[in-house]
Length: 349
Image 1 (tube, rainbow, N blue to C red):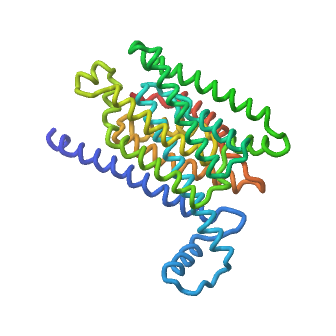
Image 2: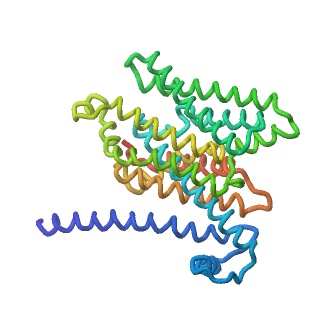
Image 3: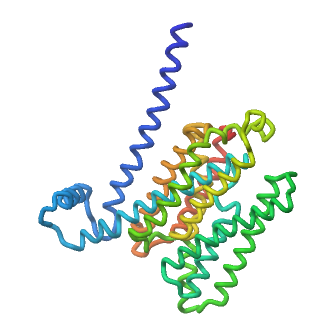
């Protein structure tokens, strides 16, 4: 019996860290594969040779267009896809733990609808690309702020979570109506197609500047979530039990809402409205590592970054015309989520 007791923890340790190693390797492989996908074929070997040539400052033996494609188009787009996928997945996982509801997604508090209206308004008013992104980001934060204010005024500490979700649905519906109104008054030959295409989600116009727009809110949002992720496990026991263990549940929820909204709004401001990532990926991650948020949150980030990158590869490589990301994530996500509901019975809390 002593041998079994000594051997089992070692086996669990190896199994846990082998999963982590595999999950760390998969995004690297996806990154390498993504470099070669596109109308202009570039192998990974050619990329390494070009990269070495760049580092050593040797005279380039490749066309200048290749340099532009790799360093100004593909690498920024790949990095953006991975950051957005990680941000939406981490936000979804955090919201699901906070609300103790597996059906919750990052746009539950109206962030996506608010950011969508901000971008549509920016396009209608002929803002610059930076102006559109700032408008989307600010309206995304405004939507969540309205949700929180309404829930505080109405809830009065009774059924606080239910009131918060209901307020989020109402605010989201309100901003969706504003989006419809913006599309209705937009020029059907110029502004309307731009608004419609943006709302469907795309990374086609991502540049190196956008990486900074994504990276700063992502780091600011994910670092606090990493520090409090173990507390999300305690929330699954209920508020009273969590408070008995010394956790300030109100403060914890505010941290999760602010951080998740920050990441979601920044992602939507750059790539448009992309659904299902923050709903499906945490479920899939939970099947792999279980409901413990110490492992679930980083796993969701790694899988989410790989997932959205591979979906973007399909979007730009499967047809001559690029397919909007929002369409693909819905086509892939909805049937996969039905499969998870039917076959995955692992507890999520």
